[in-house]
Image (cartoon, rainbow, N blue to C red; front, side, top):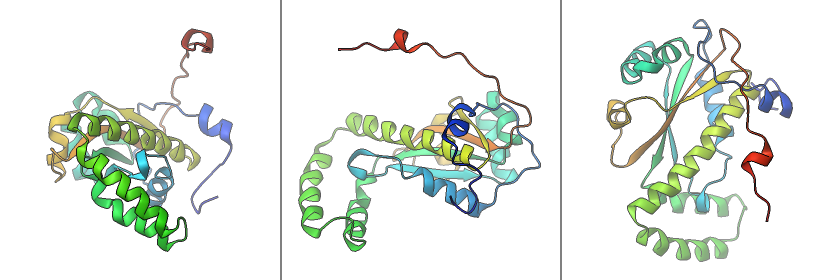
Length: 212
């Protein structure tokens, strides 16, 4: 287990997760622990390992007050939380391909021949990819890391809520990002629940699954 992790009980992590409406505002999460949770979340898979997710951690009172104005219907969650993580997807994610694959060679994860082969195959594919196809790919990848982050937070003893109701057309520029490059995915509020979240009904497997 990590330095900060509270449990690795799978059932506790998965079945104990709730979408929390109100947090204990006295609870603060250190930036050291937040960085550890983000690192654990980024073990999530992504298309050709391009890891297109980018995070803005909003943990100051000033930052949360600014965000509260962009997420008026979720302002209570934002202001009472320890932090809100704004998840973005980077349209220019392939700019990091040499670093990602080069470091994999340096660490002994793959031979240089495989790195060269894969990058030679991926470069023309990414260069030819339409904007729509790129957006669809990176939004999927950023969704995977977001779910993993919420489960990681649970393992650290914290609660979360994924938030989609906010001014998506303003958030990138508000926090100093290029809105054409960084696509907003969701906000994830995090902290200690002030009250237990509601358990919710899930459709049975036979309703949502077909077998072939």
